[in-house]
Image (tube, rainbow, N blue to C red; front, top):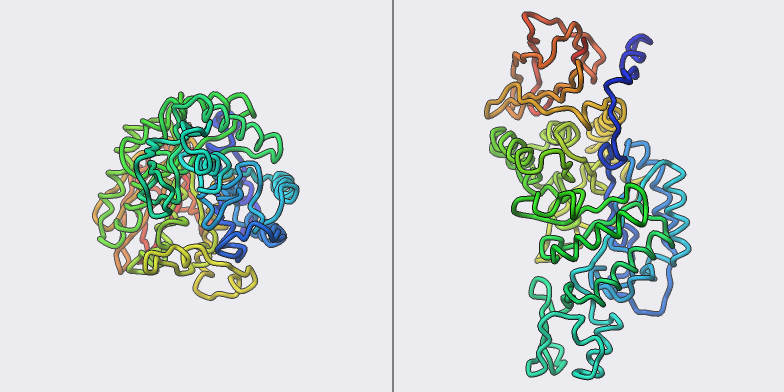
Length: 465
């Protein structure tokens, strides 16, 4: 690669780069730590393990991918899968202790990585102190109003002698009464504790789609107080995402709508689905940057969901270059498999060995691509702040620009099995177009470029004035 091209890639005009929050331009690496570390499925409440060394071992790889933030969770003391919290102020003993997690966060920060943790505030586990008090003292418990719809004339499969509201039909997850001021203040204090104790940079709110709105507004007020640019992201699946992600509540939510479109738009050879979702979400959410992903700890791996495995390439090009905040789920950068089996999520949350993953032949091309995409995300503000503009759209070919000032990054993808030619109108008055993957210049004819894209592939271009 010529030295002049390196200079061109790295050079950014200061007047075009606007002030961005760290999360606006972040690339996330998502870790489910209990599975990642191979922790026991059940917490015996006695043995304290020390597994943060394994998490630390992966940090150079994560930074090499170009990731700038880690979403790790659930982390706090629980009984089993991590979402039945026992103690909000203690790291799960199957992973380590508070001091070890605090040291892990410091090491992340030293590498330029922000750290986001799970906040499971919709429900607690049955071993949480307030619920244990309720079981013991029943009507006389001072915590009887901490939970929703406690009925002392009912019963459940645990034979508690009372019933209560839960999450998802699971009495293991006891729904907190988020309208109770005592509950609110307890959770607010937990957030303050996490920031003071661990110096975390944000919280992913579990089950945000069923959290009380006023409760979330209170969490946002606390977030604004505890740390500059403290980020709140919520787990929301369906609906108008702007109801949750706005100036009063959360900064972002999980973009399940785009997640679905990214794999089905390729499986069905239907780029109209993806393009429609992008425009719809921009119309609803405006400048809010949604948390984009292709898989996570609750859904099958992208490798399993794609009918044509070569589509991993265009899928990830879209993940990084469409509006939003891209996230990689641990292991998927190596094109590993994982699907729900008999209702269990265990195969989605495996224990992985870094050396073995690096030796996988199946993931070499994808790993190379993700490293390059991470570099582009860091070098080109267009990919974080650029205006989205659709340029070409058919069932099997799709091109769009991210425009900032007088320059634009253009992504073009092809979900066909064979090579396709594309004629793309330039969204800016450009004099040069550089292919950011091959570092070759392309000719411009009448304000357009004509390119060929291999089947199941894509190209990312830079149009420069």
